[in-house]
Length: 59
Image (cartoon, rainbow, N blue to C red):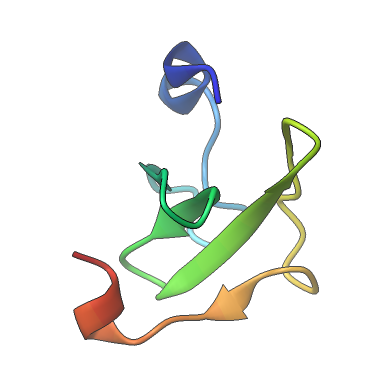
């Protein structure tokens, strides 16, 4: 995942910043509690592809 990309992409739901979680290869929206997968190096920023995450999982 190109870290520079995190400066220009946003959560499709709230338009907020996304964080990168290397362990699961996902982009995390802490506000909406959603994790978007990165498939073959491409962020899948579709709400139907996102999974809901628990607050303790965000850290």
